[in-house]
Image 1 (cartoon, rainbow, N blue to C red):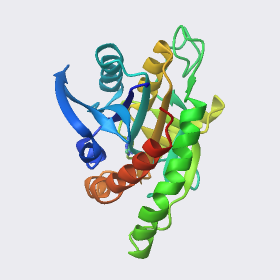
Image 2: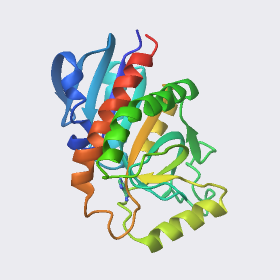
Image 3: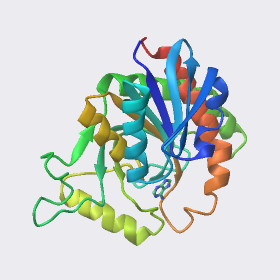
Length: 252
Ligand code: ADE
């Protein structure tokens, strides 16, 4: 049975997931708590990566080298920067790019040096399961938020996510980021701070990777204001509903 890692960046993004773990055991490594156990008959390891690309890469290497994980799922929040990607929507990643990668003039803008590519694809079959899990998972939870008027009914998107070591909270930064990426032929739906790093480590090791992000903000001046409340009240129950469905559908 291929052991699965479930990675989140922040405690509130992971809340609820940990309660599902059967026979949980904790090991501390590289300053992080790795929780091993069973979920729906699967061997899983849950961990908080902390924030940013280096933290995410280091966590992923530890998951693979010290815990023997053979597939990785990332769940968390992101800023919506694609047209029509609104707060409360969910994005399942098809691929990742680093919006802050620039080794010019040695390499083209966004290209990962010595990889000969700018984007890294997510695993098609894990992502297909994840997409189905989001649609099923949000039927119940999304309806609840819709009924209580907290949010419009959520849409589920699939596409490119851009990662970088920056919390984007300024519309002019979003314009700049989008224009640069667009001129290189990329149209990201969302921005966050870890996914591309996890994708690169998984690519290096040949390990399947999938990622889902609930949109917590539009990367504008309001981005930081309701961030914690949103993660606690919306993203955390979304993550639980989505990952629960994902675990049911996942092949052993
Ligand atoms: N994660 C959630 N919102 C974000 C934003 N606006 N920028 C970067 N990472 C995020």
